[in-house]
Structure formats: structure tokens, C-alpha cells
Length: 143
Image (cartoon, rainbow, N blue to C red; front, side):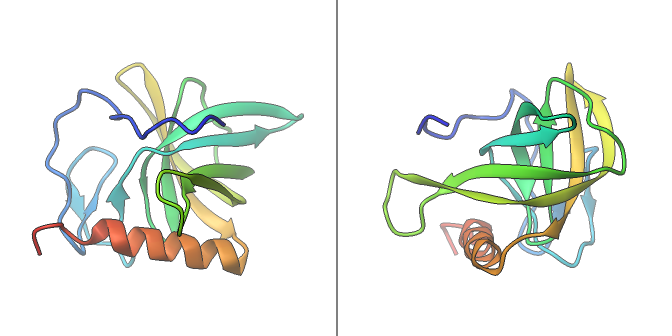
């Protein structure tokens, strides 16, 4: 994956959730155990039988990820996901984390498929990196 800067997800204008709040798939707020942050990272899903689907994140948390793509995903299926995330120590560089996610819901919105997926398998090192990134991104710059 090229090291492109993060781009805006869409022209949708929504107020991002505050700390401890999470955006629902319909743009409202809901209570969740894990803080979810709106972020756009590039990713790849490995679909059976060996098909690779380019996706991007809409949001991410320690327990799951919101994905956006141009094709529907198989419902209630566990898939391999690789995400390009900011490198923890080298500014401007990226690293890849990889794990398995279960697709738990999917909607079509604005001509794109938006899916919610839960982490079902994520190596400890990747889980620690993801947790650190989510915590840093959840902190507002003015606080």
C-alpha cells in the first residue's frame, strides 16, 4: 500500500463523537464499552476464494472497526483484515497490522457499502499498537 496521507472519508458532515461516545452506523450516538474514533486508514480484506478487496476505515476501536468499500461483504463471516496504520515511532511512516474480523452488520450509504466488524483475532503486539493509537486519537487537541 502506498504511503499516501490520510484523506477525508466523504463529504458527509457530522459532528464527531466526544470522548467515551461512539457514532452509530446512522450517525447518532450510542453507548459502547470501547471508545470509537473516526479515522480513515487503508485496508485489505481477504475474501474467499483468495480475492483481495480494497477497503478503508470509517472508524475504529479496540473491539472493532467500521469499514467502507465498493462491494458487499459476506454477512456474519470471519475475514482476514490488514490495515495500514501510522507507525508508532516514525512520523509520516506507516506499518501494517493484520487480524481476523467478523462482519456483524452492513448497510449501503452514499453508493458505498459500510460494514461493522468485530476483532476476533488480533496478535497481542497489534492489539497494543491499536489500543495506543485509539487512545491518542480519542484525546481532543484542546483538552
